[in-house]
Length: 591
Image (cartoon, rainbow, N blue to C red; front, side):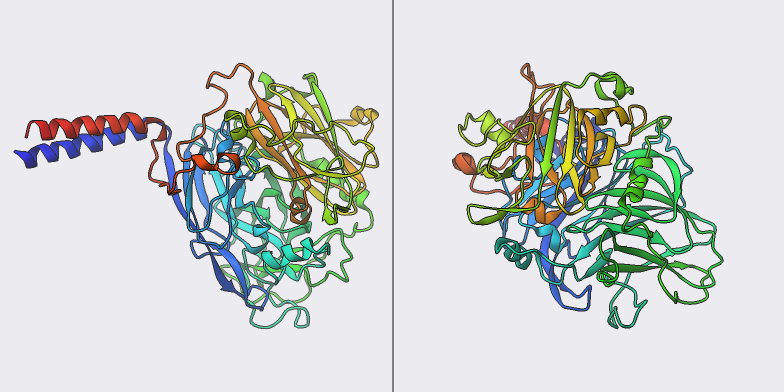
């Protein structure tokens, strides 16, 4: 009889677990172990950061509206946070994975991120956000697929190819940090990696023998979706495939009007999807190239990644010179025509922004304007720092939103200036006090000498204007108010500006930063704090049960930081526990 009761209990337990978990949208579950491994992508043994022993890390594959649970184990020797670039974390900045919103995961500890990929379809990537760690790896792709009821605005490709490109140093992230901390520039990268591998030996002088290179296998006549991400440190790269056109279809979760390009500039932190049709005769293999852009190409010639496109009926290896890069290196006015040409696909049935209930963003009144100006790094208090509006940001000891909820005073300041001020640069913890449901204009003014990429967590924004010179109010006359692309990372040319519009409908604290790792590390970032004064639980989630505490709240942290990716039904866990205890009690009472 006791055995029968136990069996009955187990059946009820399984039924309860199934009903509680699967009444919601589906889950995908991952375990990520971040550790050091030794590889030689450029022919020199070096320490890199692997995810589950792989460099780059495994793909996170989900479908729009799915819940994602990723249990991150920190097997490094320093603190860790993972961020999910481009995933908007609706109402849930607790999962964003940057230091202004989350306490770090200590070595030999783990933390489970749980979030929903809400109404997003496309190509993204994850990476470690602390301590310059992305310069050593730890990154990997994210693919969010469409549901069947939401058609994509192009024929279903025959296959997918993820291509992660980026500049690379043979020094690891700790050595690069030391260089920056000493006030020095990082210097020219040692090369460009494609999917964690060095260049094919297209040139016996520039490329050493024995380097492992990437090969992408294709069949003739088929069309493939190439998801290309620049996960590098600071170098803009030109991406091209010898003899093939790139049909642009998506940027960071939003569909574009379809345009053919022979090559495409991809800046640090940016992601694009291209359709590539295998329409060549495959006499030989073809080169896939990612080369440094907006630099002296003769000096930077070795900063070139080369992979191989291999047709199944290819008759021989790729030989000869690489396909030539764009010839407008000294005419950036011409180069800017490419990003200006990217347009939103306004006829697509999904992955389209809808700020404040209207697709017609050009008719929405702007509530606030912020002009954010960057200059080359300067010395502040004896240290090299990078600034926005003269402020070099230092992350608070207690994350911003946790400080709000626990009334921690003095953790940060809500006084970030909305325009450059004529004052001495300073180090500070200044945050933008943004207005919930505001529709803001942000001008990114780049008075630095380098191409920059700017990214905002929690949002996509409309890229409405881009030009050289100083932005003025008259610049608005040339804004694109009809079909500007939405994305989360945009380029800002040196000596130029980019204007973006953002609908502030996602409550939380969201990082606004330069994606160039050296400038970000030196302080070129801030946060937008967006709170609903009438918060009733509908516009912002409460902190998760496994939230980490630090700073002034360190005493609230439980001794064990462990959490499990299998704890999926977080919203129903207390109810589930009560039911289990009740059933167990009844079994033992009547046995």
